[in-house]
Structures are given as structure tokens and as C-alpha cells.
Image (cartoon, rainbow, N blue to C red):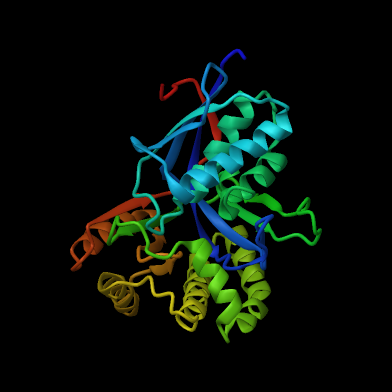
Length: 333
């Protein structure tokens, strides 16, 4: 088989209205819709080549060979692409993140979106954005949102086969030029409990999970309106409460899913105190310990410096709304 190669770049996204829990584990169908912002400075680059004389898939992430469950997930996704494209060649995959992997910064979102685009392009599939979003979802649910830039909603859908569960763009990356999100790094260590495992246990055991789902639709409506009107106060307040509700379901899971570290609480308390003193800033946290702070462009650098001055905060990265997934001619090998 003649070698077929493509490289893709996909940016991470951070949910403003969270997705936590699935109604179908096999098809990765979410129990609720979610809304995110794609970030410009956190991204994954992935090169995929099918063909040659390989007897097995070779997969590397950040210079290390993937093993165990990590490898299994990628191979399973490559098998899906091979089946859809009607090809049989084994693949060489090299992927690099410019931010810590599996630390609550949505690396699986950018990772599986980049993998989906690179693999489907190398296989000659030529997917449109909607079908690329569906394919990405089958690798990692939140990856469906990284297909688009700006502000994105992953619609949960209702069909059992998942054909209507995909992302749609609410506003592109130029819509809200004053929006910034400062990502704090309190640890770059891989989470002990993956988001996938944490969700599964939360759905099964948290007494708050049903109530969490009942509050999602009002949050979605409020965030959509806030994005449309570029209303930072509305978006910030809803995002903050929404993330606390999600983490409340984790904390009432058996066994407990506790991602927060002392530095996580330090950032949360500081943001609340700063806002009480007049700062326009709000926090949100995905499935991990690293806190993200929503703010205005003119305040972002100053807030980043203040955040880096807090005990336990190793770094603060200022991000603005970024672009969607795209192909690149600069291959990794």
C-alpha cells in the first residue's frame, strides 16, 4: 500500500457549560448538551501515515510510545477510520501537545480531534465539519467541539445511533474580541482518575446527578444569550456556578472523585476575593485541578501575574478564542 500522510492541528476547548456523564458509553453520547470556547494557545499537532510495510500501528505522544489503555483507544479510533475509508494499512502516528497532557486541560479534546482530522485526511475521506465532529466524538466526547473555532455547542442529540450528536458553532473566534481565559497550571501530573472513569462512577452513584441534569437547560440558554450579547458578567456567573455543580456531583460519588488540590482552592478563593474588590473575573474548572479564569482582554495580563503569585500556581497562560481544526503541511516526521 502506498503511504498516505496528513498532519492536523486542533486546539483545546474549555467548557463553559459542562458535559459530565454519558447516556451511551459505546457511542460516547452525552447525557447533556454543553457549550465551550476553543482556545488559541493550547493545541495538539498530529501526523498520521497509513501504509508502508508496518505490521502494527506505531503511536507516539510527546516522544513516548503509547501503551495500555492509551494505545488501545487510539488504535480503536484508527480501526474506525480504516473501516469507514475501506483501507487496511497500519499507521504511524506522532502527536505533540504544547501543554500538559491529562491534567484537566482538555488534551483528549484537542488530541482526538487532531487525530480524527489527520487520519481521515490521510485515508482520503474528505469529511465535512459535521461528520468530522461526529468522528471526533467517537474518540473523545469533548473532541467534537474542537472542530470549530470560537464558541461551540455540542448538541447531545436524541437518535440512538448518535447521528445527531455533534457540535455546532455559536460564534466564531472574531465575535468576542474582548474575551480572555487565563489557564492556571497548578500541576502537570496526569490525573489518577480519568474523566471517562470519573463520569461513569458519578452517573452510577452520585445522589446529585439527576438534579445536575435538570439544571443544564437554563444554563445553556443563559450562556448562549451571554455569548451573543458579549456579556462577560452573565457568562462568568453561569460558568462558575455550573462548574461547581458538576464538581459537587463528583464529590458525592462513591468512591469520591476529588480532583482539587490546595492550589485549586487558593485560586478559587482569590478570584472570589478579587471580584468582591472590583475585579471582573470568574473561574471555571474542568475534570481536573487546574482553574481557568474568565476576564476582559485589558485585565488578562495583570490577572495572570497575580495568579502566578499565588502559592502552588506554576504558570498562568492567557488565551483568547481560537480557530477550529485545520490541516498543516508541516509534518512531524
